[in-house]
Length: 203
Image (cartoon, rainbow, N blue to C red; front, side, top):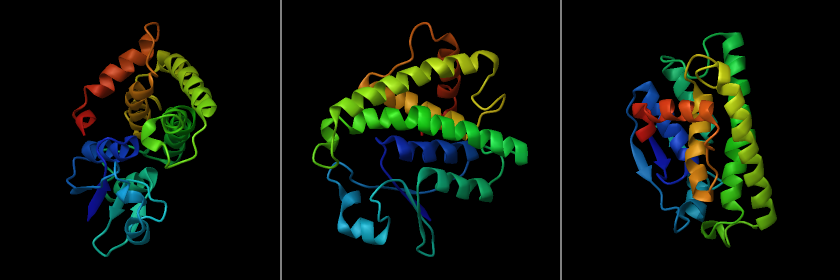
């Protein structure tokens, strides 16, 4: 198997961190997103009709796209350490927080980039006003997350999970569009320092 990857994009990084936390080795093949190879006919036909990364290609040729789906695949194969919960209640709780991080933080952060950055000019319809609204939402979500982290070590509780990975990738990518942890957000800063110190953060 191998993973079609792009080191500068936030979604592929979610998978790389997840795999690093599992302590497993998977080969990565870089895709030239600057020249939009992932959006070309060959890639869309053979790997992913959506033209997005990452894509996990199995030995039998099966291609699995979407970061969450790829992480789920490896969670099933390598349940330790558990990053998506350990029983019905815990799995539901982790998924709840994972989805919140996706919709309330990761998505608006990436949209703030996509809707106004030169990289996406001519690739997608851009609405600068939407970029501004997305940035504002992401900033409000950071303030909310700072409050959430006042009484817990990690986002879904006292154990590091996929929700932390999604949030970390969002926070780190936010620097590109000047979305940042504010000086008064001490809980969020403490959490970010902890997750950034993990070896997987270098993935």
